[in-house]
Image (cartoon, rainbow, N blue to C red; front, side, top):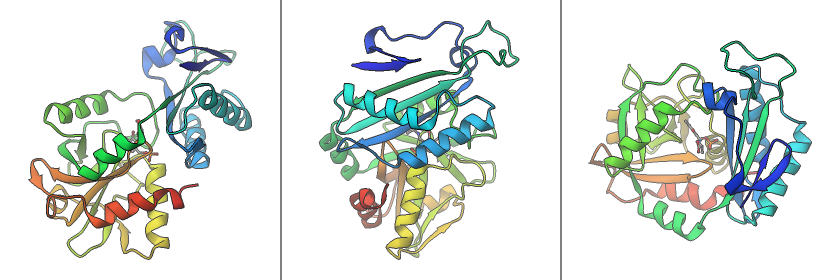
Length: 281
Ligand code: PDD
């Protein structure tokens, strides 16, 4: 495997960053994960736009012009011979002696790109079986709209889910509303058959897969609404599912051990999953 590290393509096993990288010391950086399908980047425009936004929100400079970054993504995919999988992009504020204040303007942001293959048949089988989620109190900072590499609460939540035999953990805000998963956006289909997901104005990352799924629901004339839902509503829902570049649309069959619907992946989730790539860009 090959990784792109600050201007060079290097063997993945030997790829490394400096110990004074601010991503390492302060989680002072942002990232994107983009699906690769049949050799193409899925929703690349959306992911690059969000990367730009994350950088801007943290006043980190863009590491290179977007056209160049697109070439690096393609070259990293090519060198790793990825047909189906993911590409990972990470930008940190760069390398500088540890000091909380931003480094001098001369310090360049650090850029890393990796790509890896994923077994499509395997992920498909997992999704079609349905997955379990648990719920946990929201304990992240207020700027979860920025895709930062500061993911410790997400890591702890997802490990707790795994230990409980679940795939994902849903965070629940103090008012009892589900925000999102550790690495996915949360959805239900209400008892009335309406697709519901929390508005992106607060409490969540505006998922690129989420945006495409909403467009898809609109184009297919499915009933949907951007409204928050509680854990109780989720448990009583007809269906539940989550979305992410790494998960597309993944049906949920249990929340906190409680069966959702008839305990099988729901038709809405399966339809959104089956047709997702017709609507992605
Ligand atoms: N996670 N919410 C959170 C907290 C996320 O980390 C992610 C993505 C999403 C879904 O966003 P998108 O549809 O743009 O992938 C929502 C990536 C995949 C990850 O951390 O691996």
